[in-house]
Length: 120
Image (cartoon, rainbow, N blue to C red; front, side):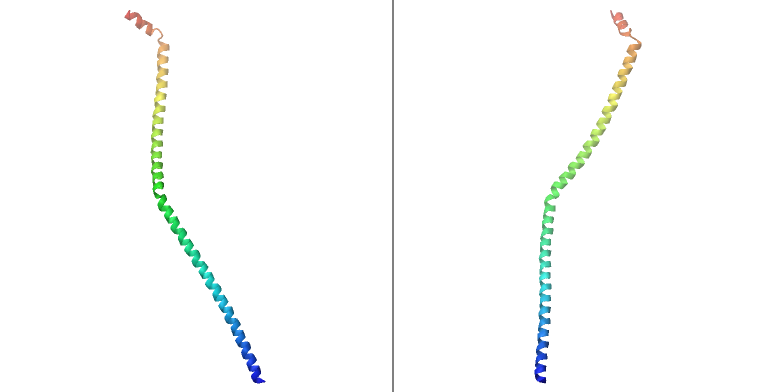
């Protein structure tokens, strides 16, 4: 009976070890699959980075042109503001001179007729 009991316990231990080994194998396989999934995701991410780098290189020249045009626009706006300021000053001066002429002509209304009479 002891040998029967020993054989049965030996089989139980082997069965238990086999179960543990299978459980450990499943765990290792699960980790392996997870690592492979991470590896595939990293490869996809590397491809995305390569595409982004390619797009950046392709867009470099248009961006530089836009930047230069932006600087040109700033210069043109500054010149336009300067010209507008000059135009406003000139218009104010012209209007002031018109008022001076009107004041002079209204103060001396006979001046043009007197000059005409002298010439005749």
